Length: 606
Ligand SMILES: [Zn+2]
Image 1 (cartoon, protein in one colour):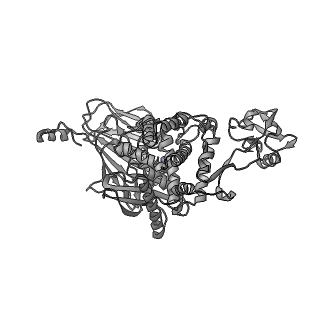
Image 2: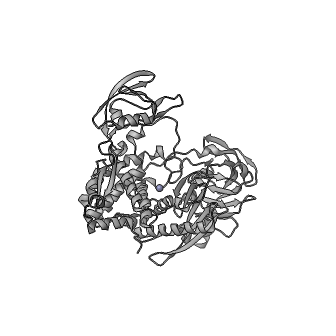
Image 3: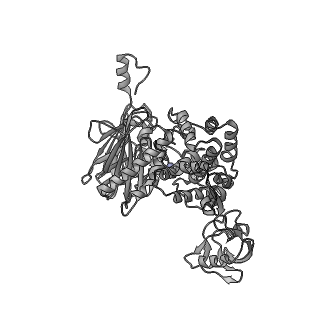
């Protein structure tokens, strides 16, 4: 760290002498019971109570987390090892009221949930996401950090991380808290594969895989070959790599029965965990493409609402429909372009997105900004009460991806560009220079590659608003008919199954606008009869409704809070939509249509 005021040699000494530093020591003597012993030493503390705390949030996971629950045996000492008083002043906050400038806090961490957010400790396998593990010192966010891992017996000791290596064994550094917290670390028996990619400016970057799996060398090579294709397709979208620290990007991958499925992006790495009994590289590709795309979109093309990341509370964003949703769209698209996903499957993915925007209440009646705001409650948050998400929240992943699909088609049909042009413009203006963007500056950037009128209309209707999108006209220009998947088929609009008392009950909130909702049927109602037919199973309901037509009336006998009622349901047509290629109905596919299809289904690597 440099300070502008340290201009003479003497001053430089003074400044360096007084610069603060944080040091962590991590030991795993009780790893068999999933415990780590962690000490954090802070020096040059100001003469006031020192506050050490666990985080309540984790970069890329937008809900509140209670990492403090798995921390105990907390004690504090000074530099001579003399005990200091330490008080727990909140669930996850500890205060040392008196000290002489240096404090070491030692604690036990329990970690037995290896995924993209939490941690897992076992003698053979150490899997650390930093916010779940490490206390930090309030007010010392900028202090450089050094961490030493004391490897337990029985661990192969290969360490993979984006932290900066040092000459000291098993010791790494981070320039400050934000980078440290962003640097997941795996220690164990890891397969390593790496290769060099040359950037447009001639600079070379190492792309590295560190994999924990019961796999053969050939399978790992196969994984590397597939990953390489994804990296190349992602690079082709932006035409440039981000400037990775240490000139290295690391895929930390775990594919075994001992981890929980997840993927989490970081600046120079990603933590991917996939529950697998038998190693299969193909199953890692979707998450790999999504997370790798993030190292442009969200790690560097970053919304102002997430800068800087606050570790004390959830971080609300207006832009996750773009940060996550557009990344979701591209994750799937990169697979199709790289030849890792069949055209027919990608078409099904696109049909799914059309249905998301067209048929879910959360996307019909609420803006994607609203959906993004709600991430603080849904992104791996924990609560026990019921919610009404099926009527007011659609995931910003699929909602955002549905908007990306619409914008891609708009750009292709009106301006002869693909969505790649917009991603490049966002990269050049914000990502490369690391300037945070807002909804307003996103709109300006879209205007820059289209025109002000189009950008204004798109953002007003679909981003600030929630108007419906005419996917039918858009897809017709790519040579697809958008059709009802079950034309003429009746739908009652409820999901029911047998409960533990053998009663057939509605299992999820009925969705507003559906036949069941309009007839007053709701979650936990017990269905007894449709007209005069007794129904005991889901199959009974389906068999009865299958004989009917949209518009038919059905009398439903049901129990609500134990009391028998009847209601009249007017059946509706099944709303599910599907995309059908023109070829299936003998229509001509023009060159322009083929061009759009090629942008989806063929490699864009030059
Ligand atoms: Zn993501």
